[in-house]
Amino acid sequence: MHTKSVAQLVKGLRERQFSSVEVTRAYLDRIDALDSQYNSFITVDEAAALAAAGGADERLASGTANALTGIPIAHKDIFCTDGVRTSCGSRMLDNFVPPYDATVIQRFKSAGAVLLGKTNMDEFAMGSSNESSFYGPARNPWNTDLVPGGSSGGSAAAVAGLLAPAATGTDTGGSIRQPAAFCGITGLKPTYGRVSRLGIVAFASSLDQAGPMAHSAEDCAFLLNTMAGHDPLDSTSSTTATEDYCATLGDSLEGLRIGLPTEYFGEGLDAATGGCINNALKELEAQGATLVEMSLPHSALTIPTYYIIAPAEASTNLARFDGVRYGYRCENPVDLHDLYSRTRQEGFGEEVKRRILVGTYALSAGYYDAYYKKAQQIRRLITQDFMHCFEQVDVIAGPTTPGPAFALGAKSNDPISMYLEDVYTLAVNLAGLPGMSLPAGFVEGKPVGLQLIGRHFSEARLLNVAHRFQQATDWHLRTPDSAKGGTL
Image (cartoon, rainbow, N blue to C red; front, side, top):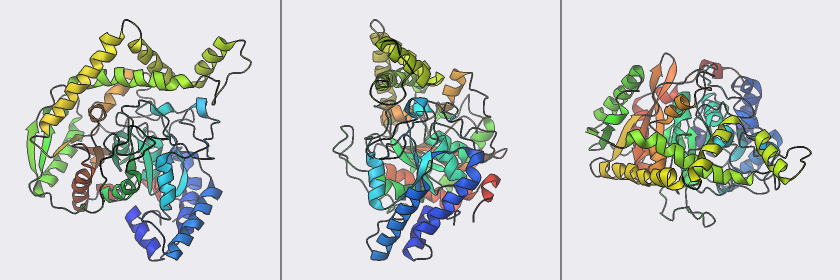
C-alpha cells in the first residue's frame, strides 16, 4: 500500500481495490512504527484522520468524490488547522490551536483528502536543515545521520520514508526544493500568488509560497490542482486562471529550449553533483530539448539581497509574538517590558533571534536606505536577469543545491555556510518565479536534485518537463532501506 503513488492510490480508491480507511490506517501504522527514527511529524491525530477517511469512503461510494478524495496527506506545521495544534516548529506556538483552517487546508478538506498529521520544520521556516526546530531535527531517511534539508524537512522526510504519499511545504528561499533534493523526492514551488497564503504563519510575506511535495511530478500535479487558485481573502493571491496541471504532463519536449546559467555550474558546485546534473540534461536533450548557455549576471548578489529582505520582513511579522495575545508567555513578568523581552527571549530559538536582529537593524532609521532599499533595487535587477533569459529559453535548469545532504550538526555553528546551501534557489523567490526539484541521481548513496525554473505561471510546463524526465528514469522510484520496514 505505502509504495503506491498518489496517482495509483487515486485509481485504486476509484476502483474499490481498497478503502481510504485501509490506506490511512496503513500510513498511521507506519508512522507509529518508523517515525521515531525520522522525527518527521510533530502532531498526529489518529482518530480525526480515520474519521476523515471514513467520510471519504462515503463520498467515494456515493459517486461525489473528487480526485484527491480519500488520499492521506501530511501538512507542514506552518498551515493553520482548525482544532489541531499549529506550532511552526517553535516553543512560541507550542500551545497554539488555531480556530480556523488555512485556505490550503480548506481546499484539501473540501476535496476529501485526509489530514494525516503536521510535519516537523525549522522554527518559523527559518533554516536549511530542520535543525532549528523546537522539537529536535527531522532526519534524512536515506541516512539518519544526515539532515533532510529545510525548512520543510519533516514533509520531505515523511514522503521519502513512505510515511505519507504526499505532503505540503512552503518555500521562502528554497524550503521545498532543497529538502526535496536532499531526500530524493519531487517538490514544486509555484509562482508567487499562485497558492493562497491565508492561514500560513508568515515568515517573509513577499517571498513565502506554498507548494506540493511527492515522489513524482504527476503526484505534484494532482496536489497543485487542488491547492492553486485565487483566494479573495488573500490580497497577494493572483487572479490569473489556473490550469489542469495533469493535462499536459505527457507533451513532447521536442524543440524545448533549456537555459543553463554559467553561474550555476562553476565554483562552489560539487563535482559529483554536477556530473549527475549533466547526465540528467543529456536525457532531456535526448528527448528533443536544446541546451542553451546563458548568464544570470547578478547571481552573486542573491544571498546578500535575500538576507536583507527576508529578515526585514520576518522582524515585522514576528513582532506579534509578544506574550500578550496568544502563544508562549513567560512566567511572572514584573512589568510590560519584562513580559515582552522574556517572552521573546525564551520563546524564540537562536536562528529566529538572529534574523529578527538583522532585519530590525536593516529597517532602522539611518540604515533603511543603505540596506533594505538597496536590496529591493538589486531584487529588481535579479528579476530582470530572468526576464531577459526567458526571451531566449523556455525553461532554466541547473542543480538545486551545491552538493548532497550534509551531516547533522556539521553547519549548525556556521550560519554563513548554512545560508550558502540555498545559493541556487533564493533568486527564484526574489523574482517570484515557479521552480521545482526532481531526483536526478545519487552521490555516495545521497540523492541529488535537478532544479527547473520557469516563467511566471508556467507550472504546467515545469511539471511536463519533470514528468517526461521521470518516464525515462527511475531515480524518483528508489526508496531508502530505512523505509522498508513497518506495515506493508
